[in-house]
Structure formats: structure tokens, C-alpha cells
Length: 203
Image 1 (tube, rainbow, N blue to C red):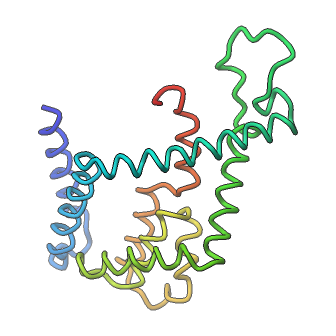
Image 2: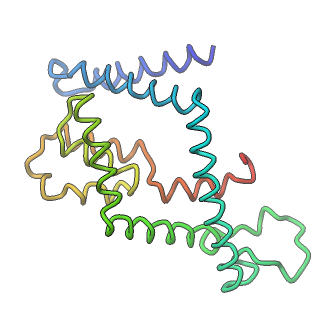
């Protein structure tokens, strides 16, 4: 039943997007079909292949190590409001979490690491790789593929800035695609923040 519900939602949302489109006759079926197929392939790899689970466990260990180091650092600087030991008995542990002092420093650290990886030309190579795949499989433009791929690593504000010189030359649909992908995804920094907050609920 849940699978049917997901399939129905996918079809209904696609039809809804098509119905409110300005130029329905120019909708490229290759982009839609290849995008859905690529999504299903990625989902199969993430769910069924043991190697992908090992990869995510490795990434989880990295995030946990970063979180532990940040907790020690913020506890040292800010005391118990930064995650250190409280000088009193805590009766409601859930109320001791303070976003500004316990999670935002992790976002700053990830942002700094992302900036370093950009400076070392590591992330641009990865982004160009994703862009190449999307361009070849889905038939979208290089600027659009680059902007969409960048949303994986940076936020929806920074990603369009990477293609800012090309924005005057792209079409409205390509610009809309870049903006929609920014709303539909989260940056790596925010994903780490969500993972930290939900760690006690979903280990």
C-alpha cells in the first residue's frame, strides 16, 4: 500500500507540474523519464547494495567524530550551555539543547571545510562530474547541470552564485530548475545539522 501511495504521489505531482506549466508542448519527456529512472537506480544502490551501507557508515563515523570534537570544544568554551557537564542536576535533558551553542558551530566547521575543499579544487571536480552525468543522461544544459549538482555541497544561495556569470544567457526554465533543485535539496552543512539533532531519535 505504501509503495502504491508513493507511486501515485509521483504520478500526481508530475501531472500537476505539467498542468500548471506555461508551455506544455515543450516539456521534454526524456528529462522526466531519465530523471525518475536515475532516482530509482540511486535508491536501489543505497538500499540494496551492502557497499553503499558501508560507505554511509564510514560517513557517519566521520560526522560523529566531528560532532564529538565540536562538543568538546564548545563545552570548553561555553561550559554547560555548549554541551559540557552541567553544574546542577538536570531534570529535563531535552531542554538543555541550545542550537546556537551546540549545533551551529558544527555548521561553521563544515562550511570552513567546504571552503577549503573548494580552494583545493576538490569539490569543483566532483560537481563537474555530477554535472557531466546529468547532462549526458537527462539532456539538460551544462550550466543547469552544474547549478543543480552544486546544491549537493552548498546551499541554495551559494549554488546559483557559482553559475552567476552564465545566468543572463540561460533560459527561464533552466533558471527555474536551478531554483527548484535548491528548494528540493539541502546542503551538506545543513544535512549534518539535521543528523546531529536527530541522532538521539534515529541512531
